[in-house]
Image (tube, rainbow, N blue to C red; front, side):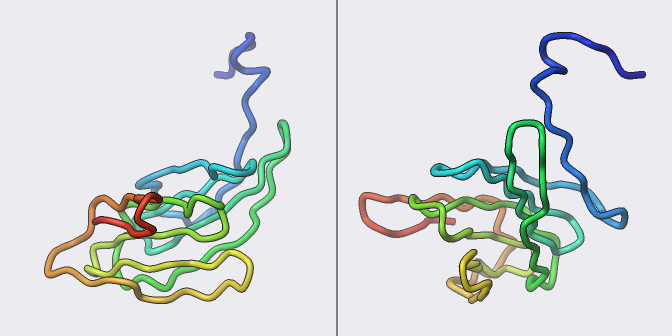
Length: 122
């Protein structure tokens, strides 16, 4: 059951789609109150968080396999994701365009941005 307490007063429930298969990673935007989650059913989802209010902002399912990891660009305008489909993708949150930016021979389990060289590693 639910309990009340100081920690609960700061929680912001995030409504997820009823058919969501499971969250594989979660990341916060470095520049604003936005949360990204990746899922086993190929989705990358974004929510705006405003205090205890949440609103699903956008979603894409352009990967062909479970999405295992994600990270934001330093300005928070793009999301990079890696998947069991062996592809790294970039999602422009403004235009909603999703593009392939890398490919491996095995699933991509981690993706990190190195802002000092404007590059990412998987």
